[in-house]
Length: 343
Image: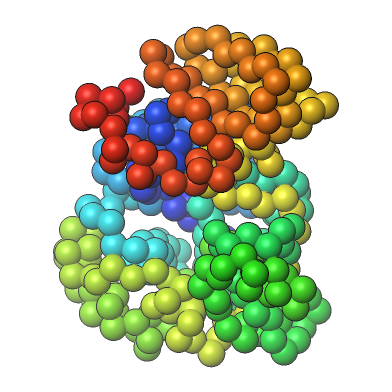
């Protein structure tokens, strides 16, 4: 059995404005440690698959930066999607590429580039458990993260019948709920839908061809190359286009400090904090301040007698908000004068 790692590293996003830009989006930023998130993701998985069996799917404009960041990954393994077409198309192309190079029995561990993982060894162990379930049951396996809070920002998985040690069928997927329903699902043993997937590439492509008309016809035309494939597919998420339609989906639990680091406020969960709960990066001085997130890039920050703030400096620009409101910077950016939005 040959194992491959697939890292989804596309997207530009606005949630880490003003630091993030289309040319340097979240996955290329050192938000949790001193290393960019993508570099952390690749390093975390190199013991499971070497760089030559690592595929990175991204935007065409990011390929040069990623090639510089990860020089050990062969350039032909940096796959530039011609247009955004959803995760079903991206993963289908990756699976077809692995079949072409290594055969249908190869396994594929799919992750995103922009997560924080507190327990890297626990993360790898969960992936290997998922791989064992995928090969034993000829299944599509997702790693459901054990929730630490009732978060309405995530999708959820309802585990069903047990089919093996630590392996259950997926009873259903639930889209992002409101906070009250999230709390109820937490009490009922639901898991977060993390977007971590493991399968044999042949099994995944079988389900695509059987269940996903948005993508399957393009697979048959994939001999025309990447541009032809992405020109023919319809955009759809793999959860909706494949997993919610399949009877071959299993889930294994994972509890390894996963966080999707979706907002500035989320950094308060994943960065080292001081005795008063402040997560600080850069040249900052805090007195009588509690539970604040500070990212001082290029200027000094002083906080005195405040709580629950997010303060970000980037060059001559300073942004001050709250952890909750940091989840909706798109509205803020759209309201800015035209020459302010690109700091």
